[in-house]
Amino acid sequence: MDDRIKKVGETGQDNLIAGVFPPAHTTGVKIAAGQGVLVRGTVLAASADGCAALGTDTAGKAAYILANNADASEAAVNTAAYRSGNFNAAALVTAEGYELSAEDRDSLRKYNIIINDNMQ
Figure 1 (cartoon, one colour):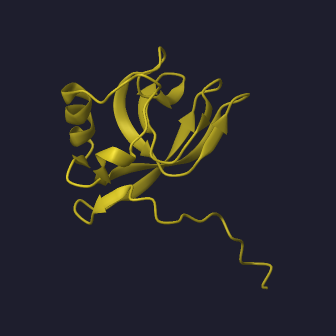
Figure 2 (figure 1 turned 90 degrees about the vertical axis):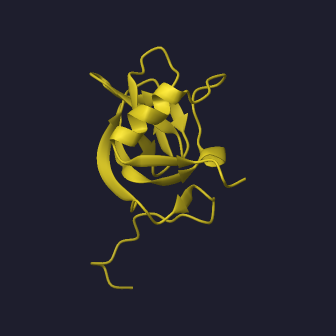
């Protein structure tokens, strides 16, 4: 294998992406330290210290969908998150015991993130 080519990651079929419009675009985000292991599809809220799982005490308003698993147990980590796209509501993850509210959906919609309830 060519040393200049490096595999960065991979994703299997998980039904996170629900449609092609709006297109799914990613951006870099910082996950705040102490968040633990977050899985792909976690709804992230932006705050001054970095992003956190929506529904945690440190979370702000919903802004991103995590694109890859990330471990921020000990320290803050930089990773990729979707800043736009059409996502399956059944595949999204929030903090334990928290459910997406209408306000959360509106906040995500401002970022061009659409939550689709038509998939199971």
